[in-house]
Amino acid sequence: MRFYLLHIRLSGIKNISKEIQLDFYNKVLEGFNPEKHRVKAIYGENGSGKTAIITAISIAKKIVLSPNYLKQIDTQTLLGEMINKETHSFNFEFEFTDYGQESFNVYRYGFSLNQNQNKLYEIVYEKLEMIRDYTKNKRFITLVEVKDGNIIGADVDKEEYQSLKEKTLNILKDSSFISRYFIGTLHYSNITVGAYWVLAIFSNISIYLEEEDMHDLYLISRSLENYSPWRTFDNNESTIDIDKQLSYIDSRGRDVVDKKDYPKYEKKIERLSRFLKLFKNDLKTIKIDKRDDDDAYRCELVLDYGKYSVAREFESTGIKKLIRIYDALVNADEGGISFIDEMDSNLNDVYLCKIIEYFTKYGKGQLCFTTHNLDPMSVLKNNRNSIDFLSSDNKVISWKVTGNAAPDRYYRNGMIEDMPFNVDAIDFIGMFGE
Image 1 (tube, one colour):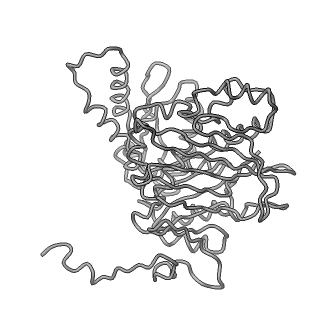
Image 2 (spheres, one colour; image 1 turned 135 degrees about the vertical axis):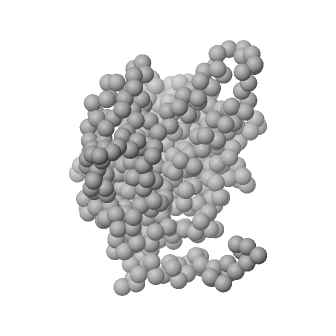
Image 3 (cartoon, helix red, strand yellow; image 1 turned 90 degrees about the vertical axis):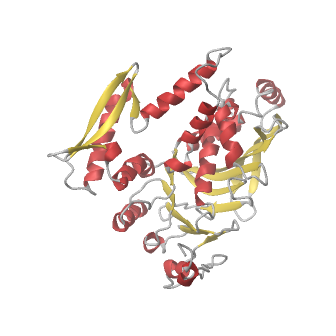
């Protein structure tokens, strides 16, 4: 079974106050074939919200897969900074299909977060639907609907409906229904299948954000601001949190690998070595410097060039970027869905385009990335739903093939709707000194 994202709608994240929609495929009818719809590039001005899109997907994934995500202090601190400061509301919805067999279904799932009276974000609405007729007039079947922490509708009989309400009492404001449903799952139903597919598709989504957009060090510094070596704790919880965060700082630049998973990790690094040789043909291999840490190894990668070796931390920014996005590329290649922010940063234009061309021809999953580099447009311009432009006023304009028109020329010359580049070289006079 494979999954394909059809549409994503979101609002209320960073500077995206109005709803935007990303379309990956228009209509799922008989003969559904995503082969020419597997790659999407998102362009936009600085600060238009490209990173906000990837951040929204990352938050949605954590809410669905982690029942305790909203209960964590760090999460609430992060959401307080990430969710739009005007709306104080984050809305996320997506449609997807499961395919790979003769028949397929289309599902729609979404939720909304709002601040409560204590200024904490909680789930105020959640809905899972199955689409029976995916034509212009879509026909939806509501599988489950939750409002203010209470189930208000479910596609089950009265007895099971009552059981669902009892099992989820007082837990659906700070945990999604999807994340809780399989704790004490009831018998087979449309809800079971739909919830399982939502969990499965989020499990198959890989997300890459630049380190400065993950804000881990910001959260750690906020925690350490409240920490004093002379402070007396009522219990061990605060001390453990500090130890955990100090451990995180110590492990940056290293991979923490469970000992039982180490053979798989070795094989992955072997494949990574072959991948990097395409960019640096003098690379011999990648060695793993592992250190024992109870049930895990802390692994530092060392790139061996024969006459000398370089630890990953001291490699070029381009090579480090390739190492960091490698897992996301593997995921998209093997049938998963990957979102990569700023894919072009620190990568050579030629190599960037060749990677994208590979995924348009051979990738089995979906690859969606943000970029400022115009060269990938030449690779994607003839594919449908493959180039989106995001304007500073929260509008998404999809490139449509029009004869021999070149999207990069249209974009560069300010001919894309709502995206005129009104800056000229003369405007910079006097900006950098007296």
